[in-house]
Length: 258
Image 1: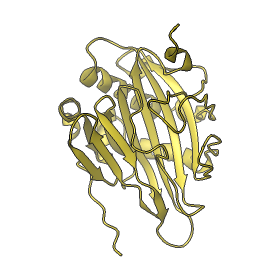
Image 2: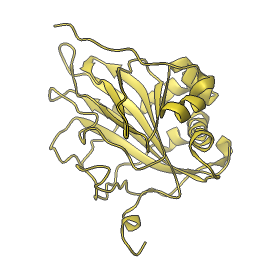
Image 3: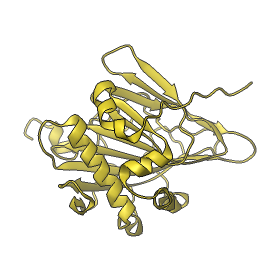
């Protein structure tokens, strides 16, 4: 049976903020992602060297072995890359309201490598996301609190689940999903839906450094499982960065005393 895929609804980079405000999402092709960030595409592609050595995710409640990841946190306090700083390593935490499978857990993932977070392209990427959050989603200045997640989903055991929690929101302001690499898999279709409306879209990100941006308050998203395309295991690599105003999500914020 043929595997049908739908093309992403790509935009020119100059329309990102306006389209995010009007529809709740925006999608860029790789060369436009690089232009929007303000770095050569080759500098983004060089970041992919990290993904083959990502350590296993030890917190999967479904017992799977298909996910590897690193996680680090940053604060953006100015319009440029010089205003981005990394904060001391911290656990990733989400309330059960946003992640019914893994919410309520202090998940201490391995941090991103210093050699990666020191790259000018990395700081420029975070600064671009903070600027977009300010321009498209905010009524008052930041700072912006960013969490970065490097993911590799593989098909070593036959199937890999990019979003084992199902269709969800993340409890932040902006969600950015970069497709960093994809090899030897089928599936992995992105599906986005209005949280308070009937509209939805489905498409497959397949070009490395294509980018999907979501207004998390307005959009629900998920990615379908991946399976091997032929003999041997394949993988789907992504970088997910969330931007939130007011602070990082943390357990104390969910208590009445906070």
